Image 1 (cartoon, rainbow, N blue to C red):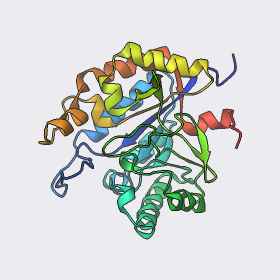
Image 2: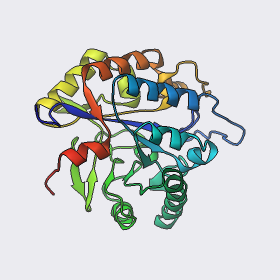
Image 3: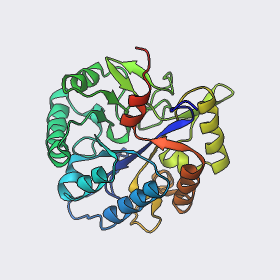
Length: 278
């Protein structure tokens, strides 16, 4: 078998349980702590070790700063550390200079804790559009090799309608959007977050098999809070409450099935094995 045949990409966005960017909802974060974060990250690391899986962990600079043992723990377990920005803020609401300042702060922390160059980025809440060419050029100027910030499905908060749901090149960077299925010309996300939590496992499995049959890796993403139905909850309105919390009880079980039924690795390791034409 080819080394990358049937190989997929596993990612986690490491942030605290109260991180959210819903419009018109302000979350007071000054007095909030995440006593569950390190426990849930350790649970993820234990699962990865059990199933001999490597993953990419996109980590907020602020989170790495608050929990200084977290990044070394993940890195020493053999996983890739990538950047999720400094604060969990919407990039399309920042000026280029504001974003650059946030990026520099995050890189300083992550590269000091890892002792190596960070090559990958993912925007909080997928808050980037293709028209934001300054964003991609800025990442390129800081020697990033890939980005995973564009979402191939339009929602009230993020995403784009006409976007490839597979790896492609964008302003000299390898862009890695999460995976979708197409039904009757409609794209349906299934590989992470809310979509992974509410989709039945058979549909997730079918989606990954279909992508792999086309030679495309599925890109799966989750947050530590999503594997823990006991983590605290914010008093959101109904729509946001459903988006943020639906399906939490089933997520860990689905993740275990996924790691048992499919092969996964980190972004860095996957693209050391296979190159895409520019």
